[in-house]
Image 1 (cartoon, rainbow, N blue to C red):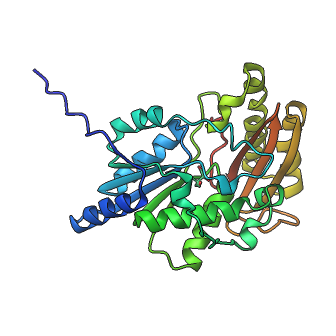
Image 2 (cartoon, protein in one colour):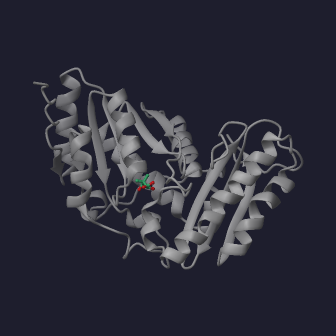
Length: 298
Ligand code: PAF
């Protein structure tokens, strides 16, 4: 009779950063590299793909679940951001995660905490222009989490493309000894990028949100056919989104490494990034022209 391979042991859920650091120190002393996936919970298949990548790359895997108040603006969704730690741990259990770090806000920002990481120009456009203080909040919490876990590799999703670049630049500028791996966007079968915020969408909004992926797909196909004008590619992506979105924050083609604006033609790789509201829900998505396949496939 075929033997079923045993399920991996359930992850240990730790609230205390000191306990997580001690667990990671023990793993390193035992010869394991530590892989890390920072999350705010409400885990979906996109997160689980990051965790599987961490599992492939490291012998010991830590996932943080922490809704970081410092990266939300006063009118954003911090209070209602979906939180269900038990459900998150159940989703992580089959993946062989060793530790889930789920700290209280006070242990990440204890009384007297005052040091902040202020990213530079890479954080200024796109999300930075529409969410004041957001990337300072992200960089600060990611630096703290890296300090607690001490990973040799951390996996971040490319849906938050600018966040990935901000974290990469922070790691470079602060000489942090961690490799940052960007994982491709994971999409639902109809193309919508997976996001914890998709749960806010009504069925009608969920349908209208597909205009985002349709716009990016149109632009990626135009690029594949030889269109290089940054403005023309932006117009191409924007057209369907304008019909479906309540408002658009940006549809912009920028240098894929520096996020510098592109005046005329796209020379090599460019990220075409979108942020818009569908109903009241703010969604972001992107495609890297010259690198990613059109998001709706062939
Ligand atoms: O992408 C996220 O979920 C968050 O911005 C992160 C990286 C976990 C920091 O809070």
